[in-house]
Structures are given as C-alpha cells and as structure tokens.
Length: 349
Image 1 (cartoon, rainbow, N blue to C red):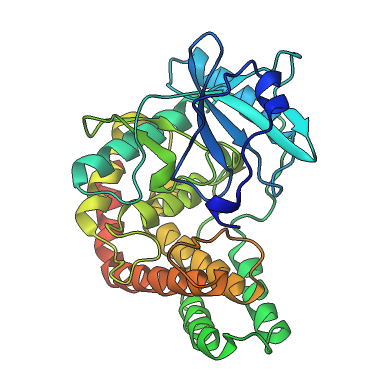
Image 2 (image 1 turned 180 degrees about the horizontal axis):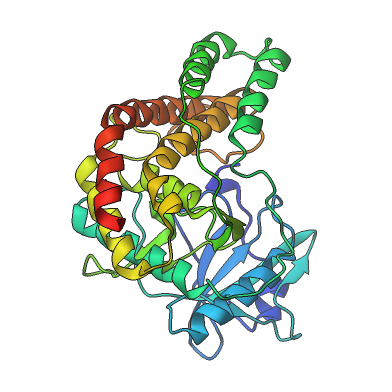
C-alpha cells in the first residue's frame, strides 16, 4: 500500500485521545506504521500512529515498560499517551491506534558525516546501557529475527515456490549471489542476550533539527533481547552507507564505522565484553547479507516489506533494488573486514 492509500484517522480515533481535528500532518518518513503529527486539544504536539498488522497490540506494553525505564534514567525517548479511557491503545474498525509524545527533531535516510555517525553510536549505547538492569518479560516476541540460517532457508524456499513470478528471471541471479556470499560468512561466538532496539537503522535515530546531535531512538515496536553485536551489525550496515538502503551507489564507508564505534564506546562504558565487541565487524557483515536475503525473498513473495510506490513500479522492483544495494555494501564491507576488526579491538580493547 502506498502512503496515498492510507485512510485518514477517523474522528472517533481523534476523540479517543482528545486530539484536535486539525492539523493532521502525514509524516513522510517511515514505511511501517502510518503516522501523523497532531495536536492535543490542550495544544501539546503529539504523534498518532496506526499500528501495522505485523505487530500485536501488546507490543505497546513492552514500549511502555522500556520507555518508563529510559525516562527514569534521564534518557530522552518518546512515551505513550493513554487514551481518555485509560488505555495505551485504541482499537477502531479492526486497527490499533496509539499516541506518543513528540520529540522535536528530524530523521535522516542516510548519514552525511562521521560526526553524525559518532552521535548515532553514542545515543544507541546510552539506550543499551540504561536498559542493562531492566527486568521485563516481553509480550511481543520476535523469535528468530536474526536467525540468518532461517532467512537463507526462506530465500531458497521462495525460489522453489515462486518460479512463476513475473520477475523470477531477474531475482534468481540476485538470490544466487546472496546464497554464495552467505556460504563464506564467518561464524560468530556465543554472546549474551541484552535488551536492544531491534531495528536501529539510521531513520530510527532522531537528530536535532539545527545540529548534528542525536537525541533519541524512535519506532520501538521491535524491542527484543538479542546479542548486542547483531544490533550493532544492523545499525552499522545502515549508518556506514552514505546512500539509502536501495541506492545504486550504496557502499560501506570505514570512517563512518570508526566514528560510530567510537561514539558507542564513549557511552557504553564497560557494558560489552571482549566477545561482544570482537564480533562487531563480523556481525555487521552477517546482518547485511541476512537483510539482502530477506529483501530478495520478498522480491518474490511481495508480502512483508512495505514499498515506495512513488519510486518503483512494484514491491518486487523495490526489493530487488534493496537486495542489490545490500550486496554492494557487503562486498565493500568484506574487503575492509580485517581493518574493521582491528578498529573495534583498538576502540574497545
């Protein structure tokens, strides 16, 4: 579905959260949860979202627990605003709606400088460090989200199941490249699970509007427990590409990586152990290839990743572009791998 096809919030939804009927400004970033910038009737600026059906309503209970903990630690974060019925979400016509406080800032689709990369690393580390002592039983469990073998298996299955797809001839060679790359991935060590954001791509880092200062993380539906090296891998494959995730000139830039892990180390303090920081570079390569596999499978299945109708003729076309971009990032990353490992060892060791 394109953004243009998203229906406007029903007046009953606005009333449930005591929101004014105007203005309703549709957010232009983000492809998962349709989002509007709104005002409460008392004038405060808020964010209204319709939760994507891939998330259960109970994910809001996880967000509430985590953001309350962050707020108590002095970490900037959006927080949920209860409806006038005292609930964290409101259900209307089969959809789940929620309201969050609005952080005054901007998001970016790609970073422009090592300074921005350092700031992104710092704010992610502060997030991780603040949650190190939170005891919470997550209601929304994203099991296997970074099970690379499972995602590679899903790509193989998609190749078998969708031979009749109109773009199969274009997707198959991409899939073969992904699978060949995956066969050479280094193994990661066993690492502890920690509470993480779960999707720390650069568009989920909020920056100050007039400076390169990172403010907080947004879009918290993906909160989970997993090894931090996988979280950082997901972050760095996004942050260290100065193009967008579907751009033809996507690549991995070492100075961005160096700045990002320096920023992370400055706020993480002694959070990470040697196995964790030692796996950052290899984890980044693994997550990049894993994401290429996911995009490639959805180029045939066309049922998971939301796509940009204004730029692509189909969901498959968008996911093919995403796959090619991730492969380019992985290729440049692999060439830099020894230097990236050394940078991590020097930074954290």
